[in-house]
Amino acid sequence: MKKKAYRNTPAFSFMSWGSFAFFVALMLVGLYTLKEPLMVKGYYLMGSVGLISSSFTLAKVIRDNQEDEERYNQMFRAMDDAVKKED
Image (cartoon, rainbow, N blue to C red; front, side):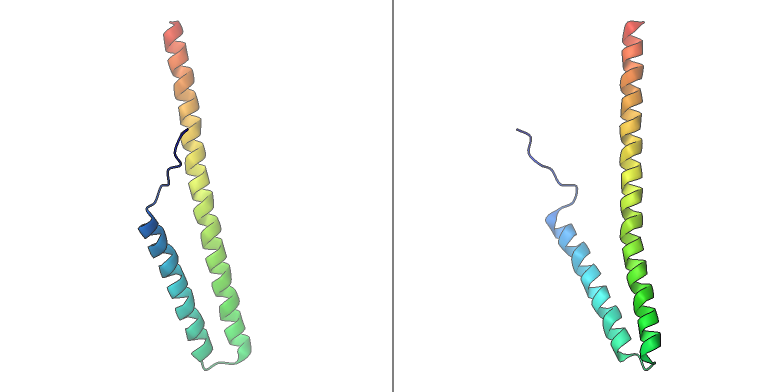
């Protein structure tokens, strides 16, 4: 049975999630201490949440497109090899 292999080490994953949580916390502290009306704070919070969620979505789309491109290239390499063997 094949052992599951991860692309990143646990330390790198911890650092990534830790830095994400740290900077989200800094953003929230900054919004809390901002000397502006609640309407302005809400606007900045909505913009920040939208930016964070779109960043995750964009990263996933880029990764998926790269994996699809690799799979597509492997498929055509296999077809080319089969054609070369027939010749």
